[in-house]
Length: 201
Image (cartoon, rainbow, N blue to C red; front, side, top):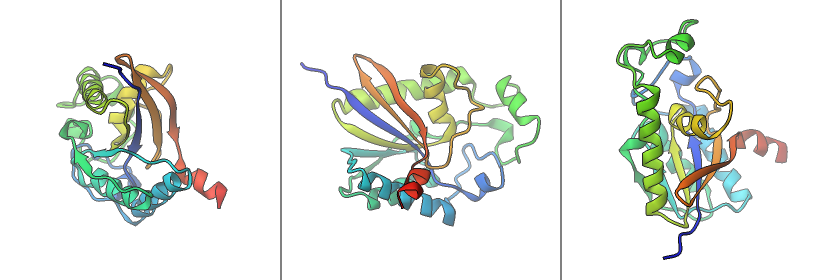
């Protein structure tokens, strides 16, 4: 059997009111706001303008990711069915879910001191194993996966030197990777398609 290269585009969801107000969302099921809707539509246009089409769209089960996936999908030339994978859900931030980000948040997160928070090791195992299973199942395909900041960061932290959970990812930022011979390679990361669209306008 010939194993082909699988292309994966990881897309962070559009803006929510919690993002706007610097509130940690984690597993909270918030919808995207008007800005987030525009970001998702513009991202679909970005793919359309570059003639990038996907064989499949896969989303986290949370509303903000699925709505983003649906709007991006509608903006592209070829619309695809959207599958939901529960393992693409955002990190569990434990007792910090729903709280406004304060000065101590970054130190607490970095040092794993937030009670009931999903640890780096558990998160990274979940994300890497999930993405590997998806890539193997859809061998040789081009996939759009719409998910969350720390899900994407968990993968990038492992494969991009110097990348940390403190690195900022824009809403609707893109990271492109390939899966071949049993492992991932990051091609580009934290691309902002909204800026790229503005520059072309």
